[in-house]
Structures are given as structure tokens and as C-alpha cells.
Image (cartoon, rainbow, N blue to C red; front, side):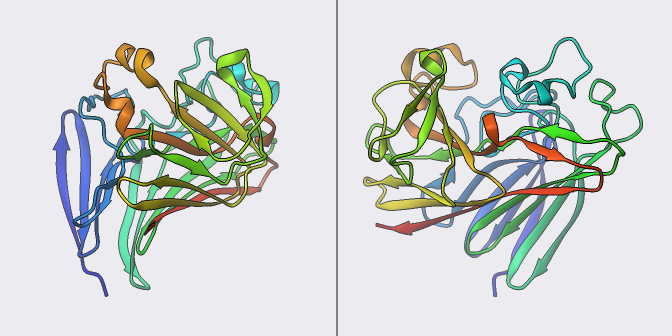
Length: 298
């Protein structure tokens, strides 16, 4: 049975926890309940942490797994049912959850794994521009795989519609050598070409900036990394859409929290509920978005 050590750390302005076992190491920030890094002992990281990451209050870190909720990306690109939930005038990208401090509910061992649970506090008036009574919890299970479950429960009396994503940054040896399997034949939205709908042929390889919304995704996608001789597996539930993103050269130079060549070492596959896959929560309804991240040798 694995044994775990939990240490409190300060990274810039952010309170964090570093959790280690005989198998893996995980770094989590209180802000956004954001996983910042994750790797198996004596192996390259599975989740990518930018060399130039900024650990600032009110700003999501370029790393790990930011939680995008209750909308994904630009609110104006979301369906009207999601837009209509917001009462403000200026909507921050990727919602309201990733820059707020979450409450750590507990860390406990169970069945040979470590369970870490967070909740987004919803004190009266905390989100005045999004006035809906939805309980949001994130459960992280650190075992043979890294399992993330984001659960929304509508405690109010009216339906609520959300989009969301676990915005995972994966570490790769060189994105130009990597490929994503499990997408062959899927329809996708090409956001870099006026949001055209297209169809994927074969595995996805990378030769330039990539920003796509894949539709009707299967339960498992994977990243094949020949140089590091591994396959990263993403096994999801509660989702039938995924966003795949890499900024490439020009966009990376515009990002102050990414090295100019940082794009070579990362790839985002975001387990999501976006586009026509948004979630409508009737009063009392619960929805869980889940992904299990693992790796195997090629």
C-alpha cells in the first residue's frame, strides 16, 4: 500500500499542497483547486507546469488542470442558454471558478489511494453576477491513475445551464513528434478557420497552431509520445466533447507566462461539456464530469 506525505507550500501569492507517495508527486493550489503538476517518480511529468508560470492571486496559472466553470472560453461563443445565466457586463474567460479560493474539505486514504476533496464556497453574494445556487465540488483521487471528478448540484428552484472543462495541460517531449489517437472520424469545430465544422482523418498530429473542439468524443483519448516511449491515456465520463489546443510559435510569444519555445513541451486536451454538449441542471439534478489520467509504456 502506498504511503502519502502532505506538505503545505507557498508559491508566489498562492497557498499550495505538495502530496507525495512512493509512486507519484502532485502539487495543488488552493486558488481554483488547480492541480499545478503531477508526475510519477523517476519519470517525466504527466502534467505540464510552465517554466514562466505566474503564481498570482486572481490569475489562473499556466499549468496542470485549471477548472473552467460555469462556462468555457469566451462566454459570447457559448450557447445562449449558457450566456443567459450571467448577469454581469464583462465576463472573464473560462468562467468564475479558476481564480477563486476553494475550501479543502479533506485528504484521506481509502482503498490504497488518496482522496482530496475541494468545494467552491458559495457564500451569499459571492457570485452576484451569476446568482444561481449550484454546489460545486472537485474530487481528486491519487492512485494508479489520477482521477478528477467535477460535480455540480443544482440546489435552486430553477434550471441552470453550464459549460465547463478540465483544462488539462499535458507534458510531451516534443509536440511535433506526438499524436492524439481516438479522434479519427470525429467531427470538430476549427476555431482558427471561422469556426468551420470539419471531420478528422486519422490520428491528430501537430504542424502549427491548433485550437479545435471535437464532438461526440469516445470514452478514451490518448497521447502517443514516441521519444518518451509512453502513451498518456484519458478516460472520461459525463463528457462527449474535448478541446485540443497548442499555441505554436506566434501565439506562445504573446503569452507572458510561457517561454517562447514552451509550446514544444505541452499539449492541452480538455475534457469538456461545450458546444452542443452543455449541461442543463434541473432543480435537484447532479452532473459529474470525470477524467482518469494514466500512462503506459509503448
